[in-house]
Amino acid sequence: MTNSPVILKVTDNGIATVSLNRPDKLNALDIDMFLAIKKTVTSLKKNKHIRVVILTGEGPDFCSGLDVKSVMSKPSSALKLLFKWLPGNSNLAQKVTSMWRELNMPVIAALHGRCWGGGLQIALGADFRIAQPDANLSIMESKWGLIPDMAGNTQIRKLMPIDVAMKLTMTAEVLSAEEALRYNLVTEVNDSALDRANELALTLIDKSPDVLAGVKKLFNQNWSSSDRTFFAKESWYQVKILAGKNQKIATKKALGKDAQYKTRMRW
Image (cartoon, rainbow, N blue to C red):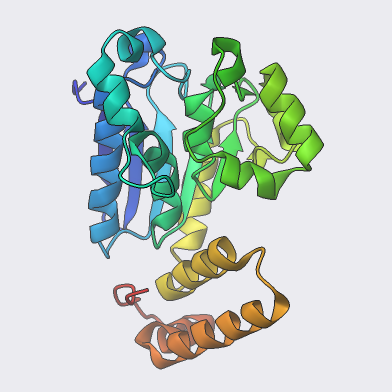
């Protein structure tokens, strides 16, 4: 097993699996893991052959949150996490969540065991979250006298009413996978989250990579926009897709013909 805090594996059909790799520390986030996640997502962003990303954790847990002892014992580590040039920019702590949403391909988080604090924040960066029945989730920052500040709040506000979000954030309540499903924190519950994530990935790579990228951008950037803005974006993205090669290939595949998609267009 590699000592790298993040493991990246890519299959020939373009499915990338990213694994958090500190199982002896419950995959808790130290500064090396923050930096490794950022580096990994940057490499995925540059690779047009990646079609789908699966995010998981080695060992019995997805991620138990911030390695408080490691980070807080070194002022330089805390500074690296929180520093930003402008208030509206994202810092390193926020990038490890927000960068997943900036990828032009679907991201599926396969959750098992603990998914607490910073671990849940990272999972919220994924487009889909599949949890095993043994998974338990918590917005746990208030337990440590903190507020969640890793960019997951921008997703939580889309998933649940404000009073529910405030209650879960203030109380640091630990939720079972089924409870998390009722609160919309996860997309579905499955006995094997990783197997289900791979099954979904295979379904997605059968679709045009331009459509996957276009839908993700349309929804993530315009979900709360006015109808007029949404109409305009829908039309513009459709024109882009129609002008590309992959739409014609999708039509051939739909008609039962053998065809391979080209690399994803620039979005």
